[in-house]
Length: 438
Image (cartoon, rainbow, N blue to C red; front, side, top):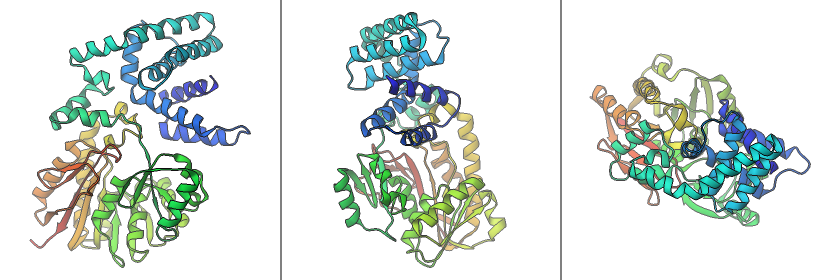
């Protein structure tokens, strides 16, 4: 029951505007300082229930509001939410979930609240299947899958044939993904470490390993920078830029630095990578990461990426990566609150910002050089529509074909941009452009 009390507290803090990933990381750090600490199983339970409740909060709130007129206390709503999540989405003993929910309610709010929670949860167990069937009959799949209606309708419009497959995929629990730092570590030692720790590889994509345990983050190899966290989509954006040893590379929106580090490895730590960000505290993250990984060719600089042409001059870089600030709808498995904090107005504002950065970055690419534009979103307004606008006003760029890795699910749009929709990888868009003489 104490774990559920902690989850209720975390959900309450999340409701007051704190980021879910930061909340959970800070909580685990605090627990590590305690004498007893948390077991691997307890960490897994807390992580699933906390994130799962946020991922499915629209359906859970619908289920609560159908049965209750008002709930005055946020902790009671969060107790109902997490209990309903266990009942509907986890392989839990329903009676046991109700019992624990009632006991938590009685402990914190007294017998009356305990009886209230008991009645609501038992009603949910009896009627939940009928509720879902009715919602589907009414065409309210958005509520069943917990998506804001505007977003649901947008994905349905853009991906008429497989929109449900895409939307269901982004409600799955993500797997941790890591890569090894080839500058000071090797695959043989990494595989031996996994075997010792009892960690299984679920899928390998290029240099990225999707594994079944976060225990890897507690190893000395991770703390020394020999192993880093990175998604394969992010890695592919860096790979498609194809940076070569000795070249001068610009990473326009680089923090927290994963792509810059991957490119530095590809370049064998030979050349120069100018890594920009508009936030000074984020540059500190990059500096710390380069020291940890033994990389000395990445040079962080504080700058608005829309001004790179004025700052560096035309044709001053061999290759440029524009991993643009975006709505983040491709990473909602890991950051589910993105769904509930952004609207179409935000998307339109971001699309303008992205195009401004892309136009500025285009000027600093040398003739014959490469520009990769990427986002971690799945909306056309930030992806193909921006690239289409860019190509109309920049006829001295042409799209270069890229080969999608064989075990990655994705598709190419009509301009040649790659959309990644995969049950393991983050949702991503990337297009490779070459600057030509015109």
